[in-house]
Length: 131
Ligand code: HEM
Image (cartoon, rainbow, N blue to C red; front, side, top):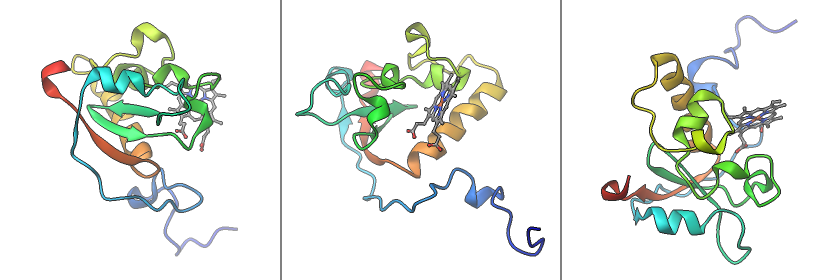
């Protein structure tokens, strides 16, 4: 039986916490072009693997799921915000545009943002001129 006096693991501050604590660096604010993002798509072992959500670029290199044969490779080297919001792995959905979506999808996207921000270092922002 769980102890009803202890905080629920689903209370807001604990949501999407990694099971093993992750040490994160302070977020960086570097401007990253879509071209540079695309080069870091997990296919080149010499380069990091990046995924952007709502223009914020996360370094997901430590997770093989984003590399070439990984199940979430479709997200790598892009801002796939729309696909994350819609729970879609279709390449045509893995694009940055999310603004026209219903609130329920925007909430899903914000939850993914929270999930990533608790696990992966922020390496910069996609340059707005190119988004
Ligand atoms: C049959 C369907 C699916 C199964 C069985 C599945 C299973 C999983 C599992 C087991 C994890 C690891 C959870 C953890 O680390 O705590 C995961 C993570 C994830 N899933 Fe899925 N998934 C499915 C579909 C999808 C779809 C449609 C999307 C599209 C948005 C998606 C996006 C993700 C993402 C972004 C992660 C986080 C990976 C990370 O740790 O960085 N999944 N999934």
